[in-house]
Structure formats: structure tokens, C-alpha cells
Image (cartoon, rainbow, N blue to C red; front, side, top):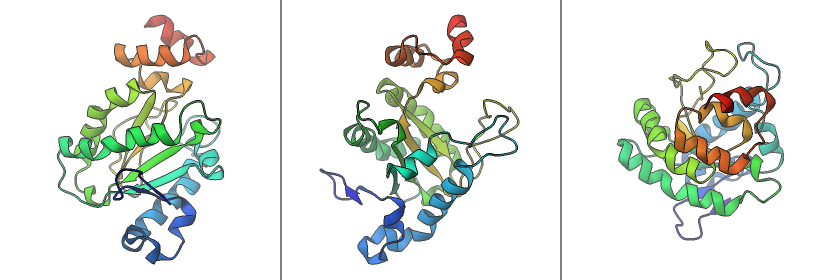
Length: 216
């Protein structure tokens, strides 16, 4: 369990914390079922192949390493009734905290992820989607990605199978991680996003994505 150095209301748990004494923190006691559901989803879905994925390997190539290295962090923000603006403000501290916890130069930084669970937003999926869109510029500008997950699921197709919707999750959430070279398809449509990608990776573009750079 990690507490934000300047805001004691912000806490990050790891999977072991979820199974600890529920009295260890009120959020564990109140939201253990949601926290457990997300950890199990990560292990059973993200870390495994899927018949609709359209390629070999797990749904998320980085989730297993994140779990194995103790870099899989969960936060809970239980309130509902958010607007895009209030949800965006709620997420703002996590961006800078992520950069402090996992600066890119650290060997395990690429495995670090923060999943901000939003159990009170189950009936407001469109607000989560819109907040992700509103936040993306600032995150990409810092070399980060922010993704939306819920049981809608979000209407974003898989890269290898346009009929697959990979962002389904049992609890609505926004997820923060470092940008990686294979994120190019998610960034190519915005010049500022592409510029941030090039600043980080230069010519280190995966071979199967080089045509995208050439066309941009």
C-alpha cells in the first residue's frame, strides 16, 4: 500500500493488499469485491490469449510482467455523479504521481500501471469515455497513455481484429501506463500525439508499424 506524499486520501494497493486484513484500509473493506474482480480479470483475461484477439499471445503483453514485478497498482475512487470536468480533475493527481513512482529511466517502468477503479460510475460509461478523450493530450504529452475500461465495452476495436472490443472490464476504470512503441496506431490521428511519440522513440518504430509513420 502506497499513500500519496501530499494527499492521504490517495492510496495505491497491490494485489497482496487486496487479500490483507480489510481493516488495513477502509477502501479495502468497502471495495474488496471490486478490487478482487479486477485482479482476477487481469490474470484470467489480460494475461491470457483470446480467440477473438487476432494474434498470438496474451490480450495485454505487459500485464503479467506488471503483476510479477509488483508494479500493478490499484486505486479506488468510489463516488459517482461526475461530469467530464470533475472526473478529469479527479484523475489529475495520478498522472504526476505515476511519473514520480515510475520515471521512464527505471528498468521496471514499462511494467508499471495504475488502475483507477470507478465503481460509482457503472451507469455513466459515456462520461468515462469522454474524460479519457479529454485527458489524453496531457498524458501523451508526458509520455503516458490513459485508457478507458468498462463493461460497455468501450467502442474501440482491437488492432488485429476490428470486430473485437478488448477494453471490457468488470469494474469501470481509467488506466495509466507509459507509452510504448507499439502504441503508434492509437496516436497517429493527432499531430501533437505523433510528435510526442517521435520525441520518445525517434526511429525506433516496430517494423510492422513503419508504414504508418511513412504515411503520416
